[in-house]
Image 1 (cartoon, rainbow, N blue to C red):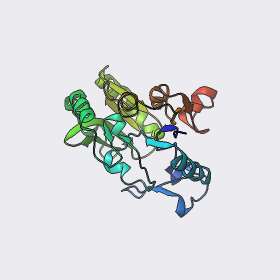
Image 2 (cartoon, rainbow, N blue to C red; image 1 turned 60 degrees about the vertical axis):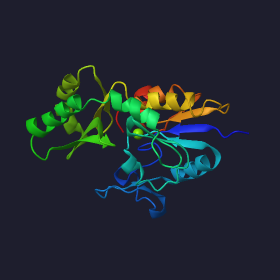
Image 3 (cartoon, rainbow, N blue to C red; image 1 turned 120 degrees about the vertical axis):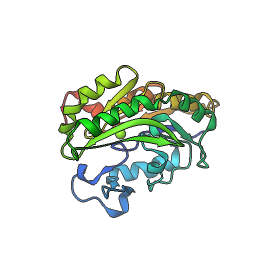
Length: 243
Ligand SMILES: [Mg+2]
């Protein structure tokens, strides 16, 4: 039997930073090292799930992480990897898919991203936020900003940034994470491309798993959708408010 294809978001789906977990995480469940020391861990259930999925499916990460940041994950991914919000697809041998890269490079527009970066860096209190443009192979792909205090502090700049972005960039907001990605670049487009090209002879079921509302479009092109119990999507479905 062919192994099911399992497209999955990573952060807050298969692991999360220690501050979001109940109790002290087990060191053997370290999933990703962060440059700022805020490492990510799997819960015992997530660790068991990943052992099962990596052994029994074609597990394909679908993440906003750059190729560098996904490289800091300890999990042994062996198949394709969709990085940088869909801008880059890595082959199992680690090389980027050059046809896809050419397409997404033509969709990227540094001017829009720079305008957002300039706003945060010149119009807000120094040290209040940290912001950057995620680049790959010399191309700027998306803008990201985080608060250095509480996630709620992002509310003060969210509207202004959304106005600046106009309709050209897609806004993503979940907890202390606000980002804007050009419309033509998305996790969904990358998943569709892989299914259409390299996985077109697939007859196995396709799963999509993710925690954020912005994961739903890529999950919706899969046969089955999987969500964590505590997630932005489940809060939306059950109207339980922020965790
Ligand atoms: Mg996530």
